[in-house]
Image 1: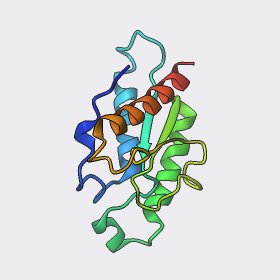
Image 2: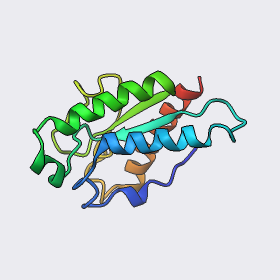
Image 3: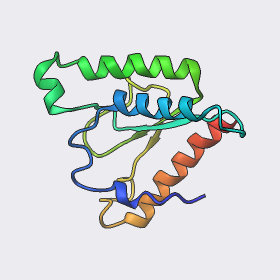
Image 4: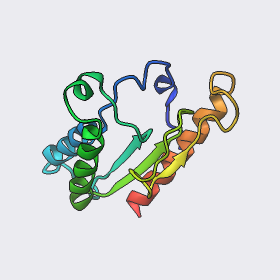
Length: 138
């Protein structure tokens, strides 16, 4: 399986990422569609750099607000749906633990800077995501 992930490797991708909202949105979409689904129970592969951030939200709330929200949402979603987490090591010093100690780790930088080795980087990330999908499907 090869996933097309090249669109996700952009310099501006990690400026505003509200992980909890994204996870809530995905779970809501699955729940809304669940009456129409005939396949096995769907699950979510959640890809995170381990650092939810949004300047506007953080400007009006405590610094741990987004992390706390993510952990609350993650707990609720994991009780209802199969959930696999992929920690995308973006090269910034964000570790998956303690937010996601169970995460599979994808490191697109393992072959050097991803710009120079985009094919290898994308293939590696795609392989880790495929592994996450396999854990959901049993």
